[in-house]
Image 1 (spheres, one colour):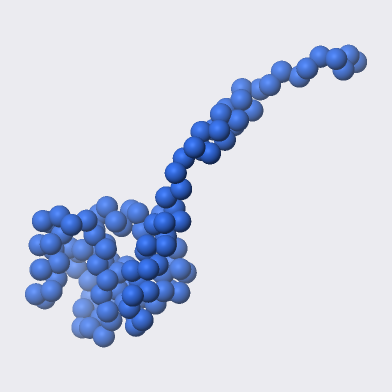
Image 2 (cartoon, rainbow, N blue to C red):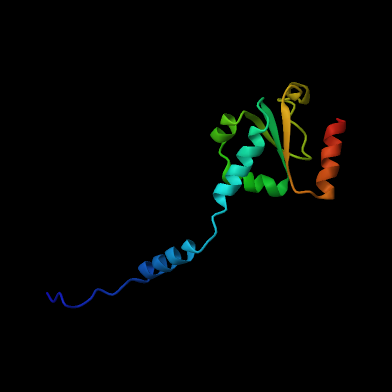
Length: 118
C-alpha cells in the first residue's frame, strides 16, 4: 500500500464544511425570540391562554414546546378567530388571563374586538 497518496475528499465532506462556514455567519435569532416569549408570558403570574395569529402561531410552534408552555402556566394556545371547542367551553376559560401575541394588523384588531365582545 502506498500511504503517500492523499485520500480524495468526498463531495459530502466538502458540502458539510461549506455549510459549517455559512452557519457561523448567521445571526442567532432563536434565543432572543424565546426570551421575548418567556418575558411576555411571565408578565402574568396566573394561568393563561395564549392567543396567536397565523404568523405568530408558526413562530411560537418552532420556539415553545408543550412542556415549556405548561411550565409558564399556559393552559391553552389558541388561534385568533377560531371558535373555542365545546369540550373546553368559553365559560370554563373565564378565570384564565389572556395574552395576545399577534401582528398589529387591521384584521387582527377586528378579531380581538370580536373575541372581546363574546
